[in-house]
Figure (cartoon, rainbow, N blue to C red):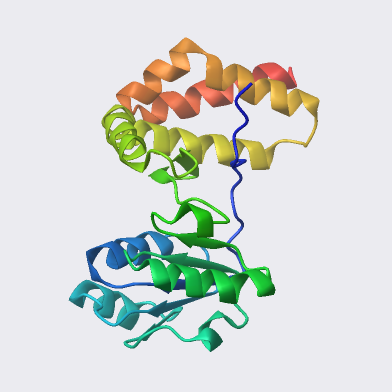
Length: 214
């Protein structure tokens, strides 16, 4: 039996401190994704940040940019480290600093230094699709992400927002769970998602909720 070496979980970012290491276009992409999440602080260390990185650091108060090589003290008081360079020696140094501190590390294309793997992400409101391959086939994961993105239109974002709103409004019990599963699995609701029919989705949810109350 094949045993997967990485168990997929969602890392809670609220109140946490992220350290990003590595500049260039890939580092800028990592930062652009990071600011979409509720990190308390984001420290970005890069010798070659892009203009986009500097602009983002200047407009998001959570981001601190250091234009210099990484130092061991940068790993003090952080909760997660993501490195995005092709420098294997840098990955080894980061692993040597992070592991005694029990800080999870993602080192790009350096599987033996990784505690976590960076997935290909699709964001649709509250919905987050993470496509992971335990670091073995990131190119294929990226291709699958692009294929799925074309099929997941804005209706999925709006449906997720409506469903989250409904979930918060209902009592926390087994009936709520069954109702939401029923709505999400109904072909009529899925058709409304495909059409991005927000009014239709809201009416469908309200009708289903009234039926449960009745």
